View (cartoon, rainbow, N blue to C red):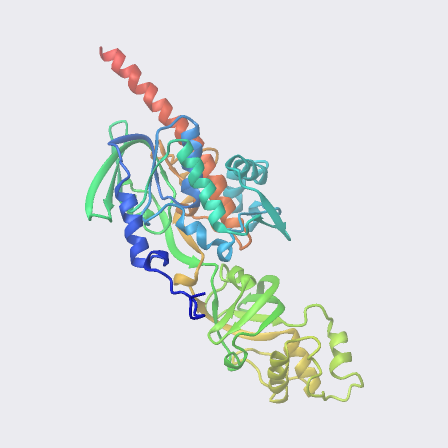
Length: 446
């Protein structure tokens, strides 16, 4: 305390730097990184997959460079798991992905063991929450920091603030062009092997190579829905069984917490729904998924009088949600375009809405709210044992660069780690082979 009892003011040097100051410091650090003219392996993208790939490549004997567009490597990891980094899942398996056959072949016999062995060697420790694995610190920064430290120990050159613009064939490998965002200049580097480990613009950078790709979209995000009662439920949560139907045919179902928003639905189970939903689909919420209709009948109308008392479901549902569906039941509300038999009574209408509250999908709320990019390089172009491109030897891809996306719960990060490890190991071997062939050719000419 000050002499007059007041709290002393913070000095300027004690204050945290502003965002502009922090960015300027990162750009100075990026500019200080020396990038040579050539490397054995160049990794395009310094996120989860790129860091795993670079570490394994360097430990395999390859002189390795990472080019990352962001001001620092591993930044995307910090946002995973709401900042806690759900790094894997004990129920890890190929069925959680959009291309299970491809993923299963890449994963091999025991992908979870491979991933945990990798992080054990990084010095990371983890614990379980249900089936999900988190660092014991519950901080995504712990995961990023141990990866960066291991990369530096293995002499990986981490070069952020460098956006790759093209990858083109060159003698004995590739030429990678990039822009340095800290001084707006362009540069190039040669590589015996290239690993593409970034989504989004990666496909554009590979245009000169003539590879096929699938359209990009964003998934694992909220879903827009049309229903007149959403505004009054904004911010309310419920445990529900969520069912999706294309036309009249149910095609997907999962249980989890649903968050009502004015525009539609959010929550982890809805993020998984976003991987399947299309505009015009029907979503039905079983808000009393632990109760059979007969058990609801006993709560709502035990004497089968056809009516119910206000608050009869307050012991089962959030009271605001219960009040809303009570009103809808009394109004005999039905979703436009949904053909259902009219309920015979108020209590029958309430039970129907509690067990199957309908909404119509208006779209998937991608953009910044989405966690994963769907689409990318077509998987069929790449070997499942090495992730090398059949048409372009010594070009590898991993992580979101490929058309692989998984459910929430650590599955997407698991794909990043394991596919990065596979690509890194194979790229190091390919670069070594190319180096040996070049040496043999030199000796033959001499």
